[in-house]
Image (cartoon, rainbow, N blue to C red; front, side):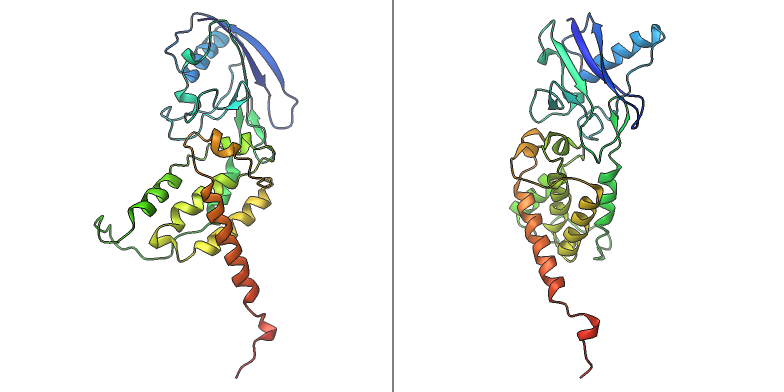
Length: 259
């Protein structure tokens, strides 16, 4: 298979980037998208050109590193997969494929297709730890948890933090990511103690990082490779409002008098 690749090239976060066109041929339809980029980089190195920089790690759809816009969609034209799981048979022979990095202010470009997603790490850190002492690893049936709740917590925990939700949102919102990280703890007994305060802290950090507001278009869930549900955003909002209401009802120190 032969393709024409239009790839965004950018030296660093402050430099001005541009698309550069590369023809590539003799690509197997069974190659993954990243293997195709590997092939391109081998050609570029042989021609003494700088290879295209892109993130990758596990190449099994687990780590979330392979984040790039392909023909205007995060991770490419197929649903519920990451870029590393996308195969060249998803395209037609002779296609022109446009490849660019995530476009969001909190995700500055590092180089070419690589972006800095450390804002996600800081949001998770803002959530703190579970303070409940769990001791040793309990037997699976020792803590009674309804199956539906356990399944929903697991669904939320499948979020790989790739940033597709932010990249596809017209506002650059991280609400789906933050909601998933909040839900997978809040739904389980150990995480309920700090559920409300965790939501308040993580949302505050999200706002500080410069992510946009959610307008419920649903694009984030549609493009999410793990198909995280919007219901987690509703749960996060309930916990956030409960936390704010509780903190508003706590009297200031000046108002507390000894009886």
